[in-house]
Image 1 (cartoon, helix red, strand yellow):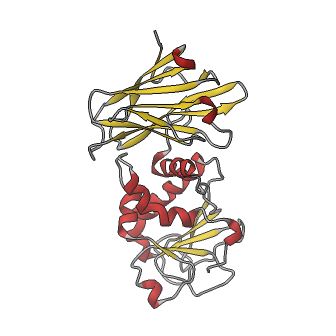
Image 2 (cartoon, rainbow, N blue to C red; image 1 turned 180 degrees about the vertical axis):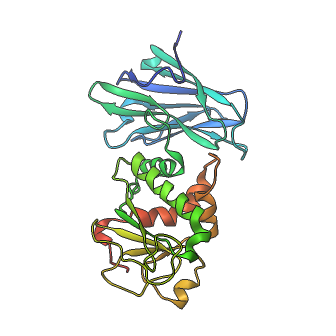
Image 3 (cartoon, rainbow, N blue to C red; image 1 turned 90 degrees about the vertical axis):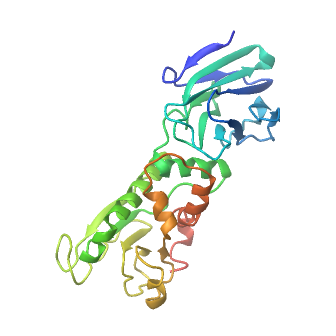
Length: 298
């Protein structure tokens, strides 16, 4: 009989580093399949429904963890309160565990467990490595980790334009700040410092000259709706507003986000999926750009 591990009642489990693992997805509701990412060798899916997968223990590398995900196959997220079970067999069936009640509610796909090498053996942790993913930003970090892409934001300081013309973008600024904080915390990087910049001497809703972003940090970024005069030594810009601004006021290296990107950043549900990642990739590439490239395209 397998050892029962109920969701929320365990934090880690050591698995034997020998033979092969076989994982079986058990779900009664939304049609779904299992997916394994990060193994050094290609996992073997068994059966037409892809609800069982096998891979050797040695394919868990020291470079990156292995993620075991469940994917809703019908195009609709898992229902309210929906959970799945996962049965893990190791060492040719000599040992097995049933992970019960794994939360998948409201999601299109999600990581059930992660498996990584540790000094004591192969370490199994629930979800995104023992803690819930920190929102959309954390989810994006984990997906880029699995793909071997840069995942930690290199932005070190954010200056926020507080002029009266920025009032319509208040929710967008808050969404972007939250997204960056989630990315940094999940990537175990330093959360960028945020500074509200005076405009015309006013703390908020000012008109006139924008306060300069103080020096400090390797990659300062200005959030504004109006590109400043080009300055090779100035911060990079993330522009809120129509893309036509960069044509009327050329700003080399500035990033203008499309409406679909803002829609993803401001969403309140957790039904993230491949389309989410596709939409956010230009922003993620820009936020994680190596510091060695800082200023190259300004």
